[in-house]
Length: 166
Image (cartoon, rainbow, N blue to C red):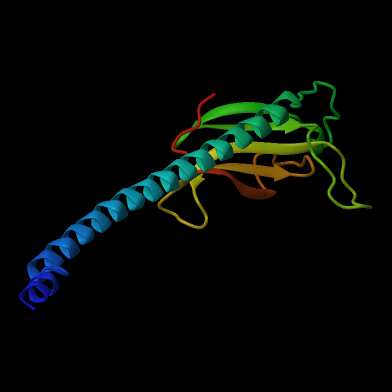
């Protein structure tokens, strides 16, 4: 009978052993969560950086395509100011501003009274959605008019751009 008591008394863990085991398990869980959380945060930063570079690459591709289609014509009808073409780069508050006429317009709808000529501008100014942030802006006027640096539709081409230089 005494041997039965000795066997039953040696089975299982004491309260101290259980608490130490739970503490070790909690420490391993905390370290694992910290490592996992750090990996997820690093992945999010890498994706944000990749998205920004992709946006900038796409903006530069579009700019290079449209600038390569720029034109200046000395053959114009002087009585009609709509025939004035330009390619002007000038200093602006955040680098430079480029205004030019181009053959890069795409007609998006059928039966529109538009050609392939347009007025384009590239410049950096405050983002319309967040005035504290600067963005690369693209202005397009689908027709050449008397004021070739004004009018048209202005859109954000790339976000978080601080300066534009040519």
